[in-house]
Image (cartoon, rainbow, N blue to C red; front, side, top):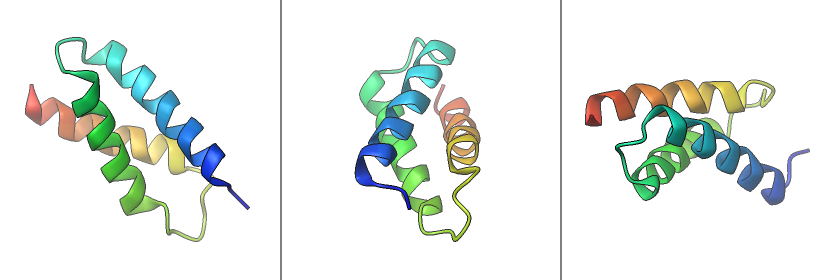
Length: 66
């Protein structure tokens, strides 16, 4: 079972990676998008791919914001 600490760590890791890919966007915007995408996926029964799915969805939204 995943804990809140694990979720926060997952979000932080995704934000850190996306911040490098989108250096012109404010970190807070990247974090907001990442949290939104994470929340949309977090209730799924299989959480094994939650990190990669969150990152892909957030990256897609951030590309539109550039």
